[in-house]
Length: 295
Length: 299
Image (cartoon, rainbow over all chains, first blue to last red; front, side):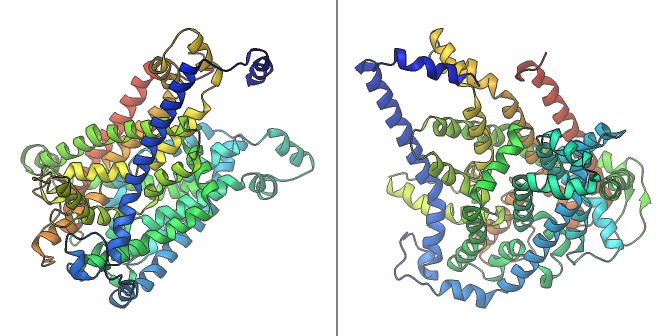
């Protein structure tokens, strides 16, 4: 970056800009911040309304009053009593956990092969990854459903978990982009020391690629946690295997018009994601940025 | 590499071939597929009364909602890039809704926007607006309601834009300013070209997401229709409620394939979506060469 030269020159010419310009800048900055604050409040309001409603009595949730009186904290206990939330959560964890593990185990070697090993057909294979990533997954559901139906696995978690163990295009892409940034010298040094490619991957690359791997883990887990379409296809006939999202979507049909309980359940389903976000904010933002800027 | 190739053939190649085959058959999962030639495709183009609305609704998403999302995300990112204080704080707030699982976010919006006692209409009435919208209950407002929901969850694109805008080299702005460019001109001739690859990325991702827009529509229709009948009557077909205004192409596909188990017909719908998705993506990327600027690229 050549900003250094600008900084060197700056002290010589630095003087306060005229008052009119400073005032204009200040006003613009105030306008900008007020807009931001207004937008931020609007963005937070849905969360506020959900929380307030989750604390209301049922009658009150159906009235135009916005503030709960009295606060009914029991709603959060009542939700667990009325719906098998724990079972749904367990199924969700099984799906998200096993699928994420599969994505990692299968995608890391592929990404490595696509980025740091030269072989014939590599560009072609990478093209396939890009195509797989670009095409809407919806287009494959019909034949896949037929396949799982023939295997009598519809109604189990298998159709959701097994494909993840054969690699996920998006994760492969993201990891490859990161692996490309690792300096070749590190790998060559390991090769000179007699490391095989697998050992290089396990020792050098995995250690250097921690941020990317963290991002892929987070994205994959969150994707599965929030996934609705595939569970709807494969699990809706079998309530024992419902995941949280299916349960939540059906919650209102099961409990008629109890908006207060529905909002309490909604909040409970959102909470884990938000907690995870605050624990791993940096990995998130870096990961999201990685998908875009280097794409 | 090998396991992925196996996976790719099993979960990508095989379905693609199988889907093509099934699209020429009548198949209900129970009896073996029966070859019926082009009948499925003829039915899609000539007879199915729901294909028209489904295509129009999906085009609405791609033509109205996605551009609004991209513009909105860009605007917020610009404001954030200019903010001197609290960037991290604001960024968190704008990103948070993108994390909310779609089912949960949709439920929240159906409640917040419910016509009778929902907080938004209560506030609107207090502001003196007499005819408050019926939101998810009216065919005219259901898609705008979904759009509001979409704009709430725009955090991912916003963060990508923000990172790109902050990456624009400062000297470019300085030299533009020396040349007498005002703020708008700097936006048009410096910011926009420099981050154009990211804008392209956002549009492509948006279009692909628009083509498979499903979860929000499904949940909103399901919950809003239950709210209208107040009986939770499961026999009523609530997909697309109200009046097929949220019947998007993937919803139609789901209905045919997984409610009626017309697998052959659903496969035909799928093949059309595949062709359209491929063509649109290709068209966007080809056209983009004219306006996307790659720093350091020869051409």
